Length: 118
Image (tube, rainbow, N blue to C red):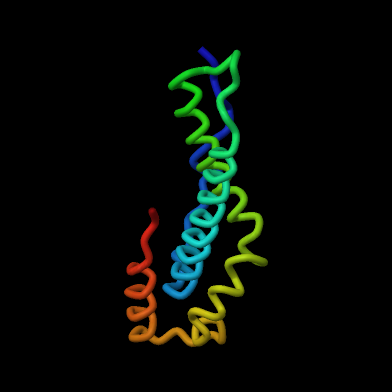
């Protein structure tokens, strides 16, 4: 048995709650980025056929789906500033300017919830 000398509970940092406007920005950029890149990767994969040899079957298909999802997540995080942020500023100009009243945030969440993924 391996004994660890470090106290790992001391390493855990308390999570600070996000402001509602920041949560909306995060949800919006995640939705836009993952939807765009997910569709792009899916279209890219549809243009390439299965290889004649060395195809992993159903296991490869499942792994490829998970890989594509992670790739879309990382791409959306890496490009959120240049890709989704301008869309956020256009969709929610009052939040981009710094307004944080509760009524407009509720309306914005309702608008965001109306968006759907395929």
